[in-house]
Length: 345
Image 1 (cartoon, rainbow, N blue to C red):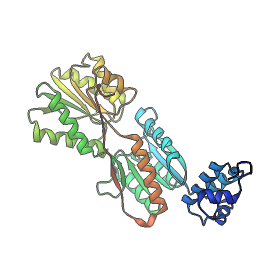
Image 2 (cartoon, rainbow, N blue to C red; image 1 turned 120 degrees about the vertical axis):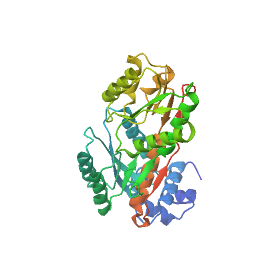
Image 3 (cartoon, rainbow, N blue to C red; image 1 turned 45 degrees about the horizontal axis):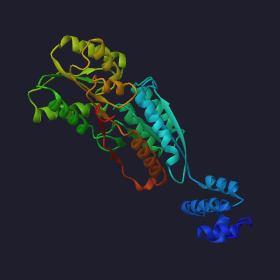
Image 4 (cartoon, helix red, strand yellow; image 1 turned 90 degrees about the vertical axis):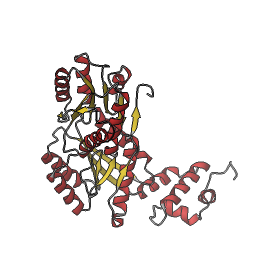
């Protein structure tokens, strides 16, 4: 092409290997052109410096399908949920051939009544809803109501249905619990007493964590004594109180498994009682608060969610569910978990 001449529509068509009529349809905003072809025309126009790039970009953007997705997460004070929100925001621009408006809401009140109410409110404004929630009849009822309104619901991190009734994106928590147990069997100098902190038994992820944890010891290491779990109610302050109580009442404790919320409280308790580094501790999520504890030996082992993968799978699944609602089928997406010691961070 003669570089002294201003590129024309014909030049764009030649560069993109499409007809002039196709380029004109793209410039006119016609919906009769496939999105992949639109993108090819755009790239060709950019390559040759087509004068109408502004109009072309706006037409292509206007022709893309638009979605509004809502997510209900836990307290904004908890780094894990802020990290999920950030992963979702980062994933939005990577979704091809569509425009996504993201609505993220953090809940301080985690009562089933409030969670169900906020799910319904968000579902009234969004094409699909993602939620981290405990299993409860009110939450199940909200899911059923949204499904009846053709608003797909996705459970993140913790399943809210044992039957596959609700799409789930997260870990195989049975394996997570058994992996944690494997650590204690192989790292503890000898079998001993192990404490367990659980946030709330109504979270299926935590229930399965503990169940898998206990099953491993029954099968492979019956010499360990597993204490009854102490509830933290997803509170760092309560986790610290419960962990301090556990440590003070059990000076011979060999290990601590933080199977749910409250890891920062457990770390604080280990340090305040002078027990940091003296027992094996397994917890969750590599974050600003847990990284130093792993490095200084307060934590022995961290199991972490692949948040970028979870965000990608959630948005991809929502697009699929909304754009092709008649395909049916509930989706369970199990992702591999990440494992950290102080030697690999």
